[in-house]
Amino acid sequence: MKKRIQNRFVADYVLMFLISTLIGVFAVTLLSFASDVISKNLVNHNYTAEKIMTDDLSVMEMEPVLENGGGVQVVSKNYEVIFSQGINNLPEVLTAETFTDFLTASQAKGNPYSYSIAYNPRAEFWLLVTFPTSVRIDFAIVHNPDFLSVDTQRVAGVIFAIALFYLILLGISTVIYSKLTSLSIINPLKKLCSSAGRLKEGDYTSRVDLNLDNEFGELETIFNQMADEIEKEIALRKQSEENRKKLILDISHDLKNPLASIMGYAELCLTKTEMTTEQLRAYLTTIYNNSNRANRLMTDLFELSKMETPDYVLVKEKLDFTEYLREQMGAAVANLDGAGLSYAFDIPDIKIIAAVDRQQMSRVFENLIDNAINHNRPGTRIDLIMVDHPGMIEVRFKDDGIGIPVELSEQVFEPFVKGDPARSSESGGTGLGLAIIRKVMEAHGGTIKLATENIVGSEFILFLPKS
Image 1 (cartoon, rainbow, N blue to C red):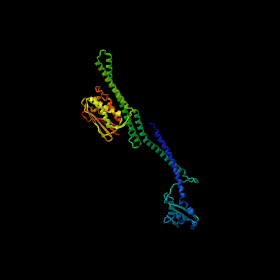
Image 2 (tube, rainbow, N blue to C red):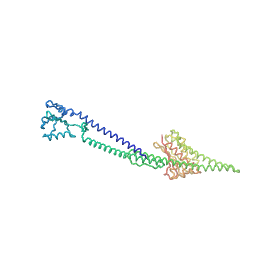
Image 3 (cartoon, one colour):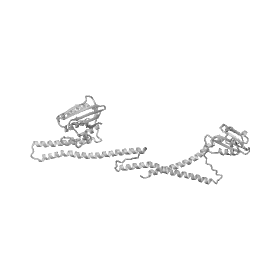
Image 4 (spheres, rainbow, N blue to C red):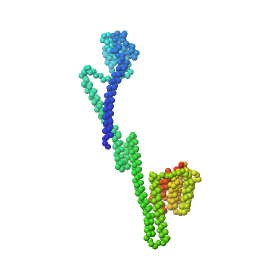
């Protein structure tokens, strides 16, 4: 993977570095401006010692200072307090040394009091104005352009060095941080791209393993689910292709025998000059039976193919399913009697409404009856039992005949299942009847399965939703 994203991160962080530097310069300027504005608007700035200073103490305007919670002290040149009102923080014993210490401490950072001190050389006294400090920002950049100092260059150099070191440190940390944060995105992306590439090349077992509890973790889940679906789809497509090839082989196999018989007996009828009427009738009967079998096979194959297309739509109507089932079984009685099969139908004498396609649902029971006739010996008993469930109709169709092997219980509904008695030429079946039944039941929202608990015979269980 190219480093476009990583470079983009570096560029973004460099931009943030420049912006943060500008913000820092602006913050320093703003802080200095704020300090100046605040100092000019505070009470202690309006009533400083210089502003209220007079030679005569009796006319000095001390009331505003006292009214605003401040204090005023006058100290003589001999360090005697000759006047004091309000706040007084002077040492109890005032000497030249203690007064000097007091003056030094009064200008210290973080002092909870604001002091304004001025000396009157004519009257020879110091005037102290004291205000308690509520909030103060002790920040200021001071430069005297009128007097150059020998330390100016040295101080400027130190300030420049500190600023340069700060910028270098900030730049290095920006690059390192951008690299680290970009890796948290680039590494998962590399794994995703690698897995997606393998998936593109046909490795449908490719998966992503990030173990992250973030958006990449969600993307991992989505990608793996997508890969699962693709793998299943490919497996189904391969299975479908194999089924298609198998279906073609099975159709060819099942059509080969009747067509070979038709061609053989037709050729015999054409080439054999001396033939009795009985022989000719027997040959023609064989030709007709094999033609009929081939026609049934093609008809069932056409129906099954039609059901698997998107255009297959049922024409449903709501009807009394119990009455409909009686009609279907009544129509089958003649065929069952002709095949020598006994039967019993247990259909409730109540009205149960279901939405079905009459024609397609008729194929279900016709195919079940045909299978029972074609694959069982005379004397076999057929039972049909209908059970009413909440929201569902259950129909059991069972016999005590030759049965179906248990290992075919799942595959028996596939077309041309090997081992299915329906594929024998003697039975007359096409091998597609049960596949058609399943398609019709699924189209109705129902199901069909082969019961495996019966030891004798076979039993099909159908479920159909009620309306």
